[in-house]
Each structure stands twice: as structure tokens, then as C-alpha cells.
Length: 341
Image (cartoon, rainbow, N blue to C red; front, side):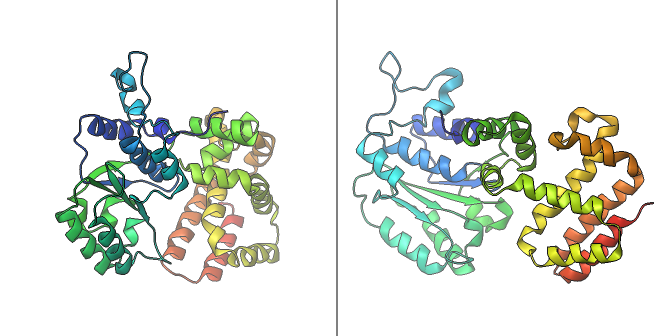
């Protein structure tokens, strides 16, 4: 059973890197932006392997696999069996460096240590690769130290910075990188992965794929942590609250799980959306496995009321993001969800 392949999910970005590798025109630095779980790190590792593979895959004519429509995918392939590939996959290649946040940020000492290593000659790689994961967490001093290295990069070295968005970095750093945006992974690829690797039926897999926001990391987490059961509980509580006391108890339970609030709000909004969508385009509902509940609960709510509740959830999200009191915000939200206009 084939594993999920980020090279297939990110064809445009991969093709651009592949052509640069094949033509010998790799830039000294890339910036990969996009949400978590879109394959940024996996593609960075794939580039490191392809650039240093001793026995790259070849076609029947003995040429490296790069031609026509398949150029992007094939040029970043590697044998996976040579000494270099095995070391990179194991994470112990001496010329492939990965820097990650220490706590909440990447500190200047980490960047200085990286720069010291890169000032030496490569041990064995033809192309050294330095991945700076979560580059948006570089503290100011670390960012300035990295900038100096990017201005005068070591030979035979490629930097790969990953970040959520380019605006999170110093403009001077961004200007010295080839910027490639990693799009959300198509829901169809996520669905196939969930069916093949988690044994899900197509309907449940489709629901999770639709709710994963284009992130393989998110889809995998949802599949492995009982997300469907959690969703069912949230929806049942939403629809069964009849007294002020029940609503406040629900708010209290949510206030103790701040880290889960984005997921809870997403479930709430998608559920209310489905109650509306089922009236006009039932084929576009997200929670297809709950169609009986949708048809049961939908007629109990007016569309204007459902829209008002969706807006109330959005407002609560914004207020909490702005550091409003969580418990008071949730109390107000529960009252809004109970109202019918």
C-alpha cells in the first residue's frame, strides 16, 4: 500500500525545484510557506535526497527520469537505498541540518551553531541542505544573524526556510529566498489516505478530509484521536441544551479546554452550515454521515437564526484571539446559540 506522497500533492512547487535541480540552477535559499501538514518538511527532505542520491532513478533509456509532464515529480525522486539516502532518511547525515524552535522560538545560538557548521567543508554531500523549520519564530537577533549568512551563503549549500506566511519574516530575508507556496492538500487525496491507511469507510473519510483544512497532519490526528466521537458529542450538546443551567455547564466544560476551542468552533460552524446547505444543495453538506440528524434538526431552525449563530461563533473566536475573558465569552456564546430569531 503506497504511503501518502507530498511530491504528488505539491506538484507545482516540486516541479519548480526539480527543474532547478536538473538544470543546475538551484537557488541558495528557498522559502516554503503554507499551513502545517502541507508537506513542506517532507519536500525539503526529498530535495536533500534527490540532490545527493548516488543512484537516482532512471528510465528505460538510462536517463534520469525527467521529461514532459512527469518532470516535476521524477526529478526529485531518489533511490532510497544508497548510503546518502539512508542517512538522510534516518536523520543522521552530517551535511543535512535541521533547526527547529527551542521552546517557542529559534534562538540566536542555534543559528550561530548552524553557521559554524556551514563554514566548514562538507563531509560527503555534493549539496548541503539546511532546513530552518518554523522560521517565523526566529527571534530578532537570530533573524539578523541568518540574514548575514544568506547575504554571503556558503558554497554548495541550500537553505530551506519553512513558515506559515512570508509576512511573518523579515522582508530582507524573504527577498533573498525563492518563495514557493504550498497549497492545502486536496480533500480527495486526504480521503484516499484515510481510507487506505486508517481503514475508514468513504463517508467518514470524506467528512474528516473536508474538516482537515487541507492538512495531512490534521487529518491524521483526527483519525487517530477519536475526532468523530468528539464531534458527535459537541453536536448533541448543541442541540440538546434547553435550560440556562445546561448552557452554562457546557460553557464551563469548554473553558477548561482552551486548546480545543478552534476545533470545537469549527465543528459548531460546519454543523450550522450543513443545516442551511441541506435545504438548497444537500449534495454539498460536510457531515454526510449525520444526514438523518441534519434532516431532523434542520427544520427546527430558521435560516436567519442559523446565520446569526454562525456569526456569533466567529465573534467569539475573534474575542478570544484578542485575549478576552474566555469564560465570559463562552457564556455569551451559549446564550446566543440558544436564541431563535
